[in-house]
Length: 237
Image (cartoon, rainbow, N blue to C red; front, top):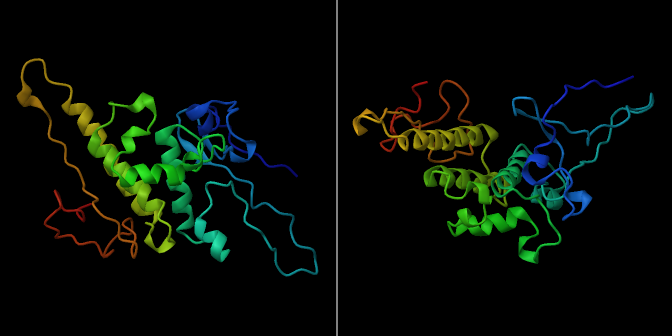
């Protein structure tokens, strides 16, 4: 019996963020589960839950949770239960990894910097996330886009699962952050003949998370379509 997997030409995301041979942190902290194909499209690969099937006299398989320290939902350590919001926490850690270009855990750093989730959150709450982000991104990001990105990560990293967004909401807010960044790129490229030719780009605002519903369900999802704060009708898809 064999397992056949798609070849991911660009390897793990980790190698693009902080090298393929990171010697400054322990092997337990390495995460190679996020792989990139030839177009840098990410896919997740994880074998932590693989187990041998049950014997004939067994009725179920008991599977313990496997995961890398630094990514596991802190609520899991208290309740020994994973929920749909546990993935949101892990993804929040990845968001901070990508922005700061450092691993989730780095035990050689000062104590307050070891855990990227705790360290980055302390700067995010001060509104100074730009002070710790990857030096290659400094002065290259639209502040509004960075603000939305930071707010999204902060929601994901909430201590209580009930306060975290659903992954559908996370996706929408990241797409909005991307729209802000792309708009900024267009507006900073002036027309050679006239400044009056700047195109108008409509953004779909996603100002807040509603943890009780998902924003990707069609029809009546509980979204207030008549919000006066909306630039366009958010329900007009």
